[in-house]
Length: 120
Image 1 (tube, rainbow, N blue to C red):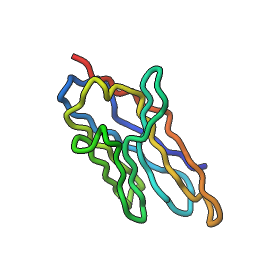
Image 2: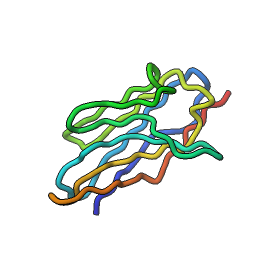
Image 3: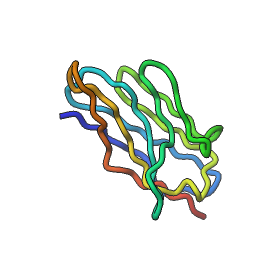
Image 4: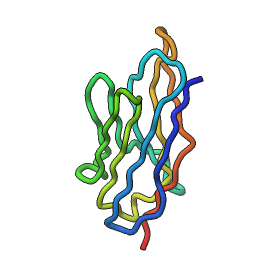
């Protein structure tokens, strides 16, 4: 059973920093990409940042220059370093893993979500 497990999040003041982690676990063939999405109350889920295992990183325009995604290939883990946080970054952050469970097909796996609240 493939899972993606998140950690991190919490309450931080505006201008502060947080780091989220997400690890893929279980038996699988290979990872296509892992990344982060977020959903604020009353809004649709939106992409924050993704790391493509074959190369390439994508960021939402709203977080460019403030957030950085990185990976530890040996640990099948991605990290999201969030700096200069703003109240508008308040949301539930979900980890996504696009993973081949076998050689033939991939699926999207989602974490349970972690709350990030930016408030003074």
